[in-house]
Length: 328
Image 1 (cartoon, rainbow, N blue to C red):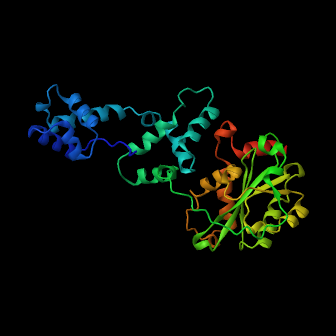
Image 2: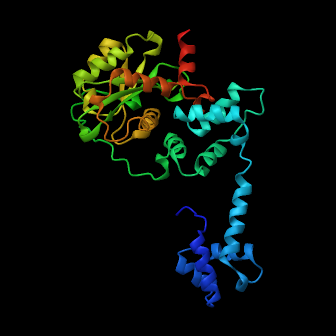
Image 3: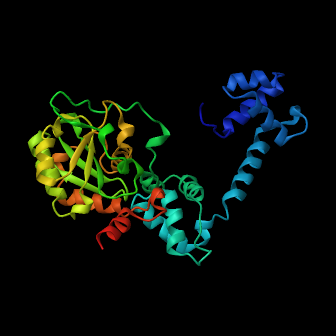
């Protein structure tokens, strides 16, 4: 269903002309590709008798209502609140993350309260210009028009003697015990480059792994290196899809003592934490990114920024904060 759009001035002029010519409201709606109820509400809000409807006065009434609705916006009147909202928007936090995090940061200051819908409204009501473009670019707008996920289909024929996700310990699914990870690759433009992503299921802590190529040997070494500094208690299992880059999973397990379990083919929900994280990373690395041009330092900067975002699943604490508690 198409999203409702406010009537424009030219539409009100057409309503006025067509009503004056004797057309029914249903005919007017059909000519304007609008719902009959939209035309009916518009006229009933403006005049008692439709024959007195005039576009000029109707548009003036609409402008006055819109002005009254937005003239006392909270972010315009609360400078401290506006400053912190804009700061976190620039860090690509979602409006919901910002709203919930502010409650934790200012638990006793009721002036520092805002809903995520108010933040969205503030951004979208801004007049067209550089500030509006910059703020809108920070929002996670990919969900507005979802496209079928044409995920890179990697050959699974190279995976031999693997452990199915059905054999994975029950504690992994419960997300109670930390140390269980999900892994994947984000593929670059023309399938010519990639980076690795590793996400801890309990804390959502994410590691981004620089890869020279997608060959199994290289991926195995890069992932093993990423895990080598973690305590043994935080290195238990890794759940992966059946991509051929994990063909050396037996060697990986021998080197790291991390058991690798493989999800069923075409079942991304079995690694939902990782899939969601990869979606967030597309804010930083849009489809078509050439990862050979992204340095390790750049990857780690994005990693830190992502891990410093508060998460709803963590009661608005950050992955960094939750993961640090495990290292104490």
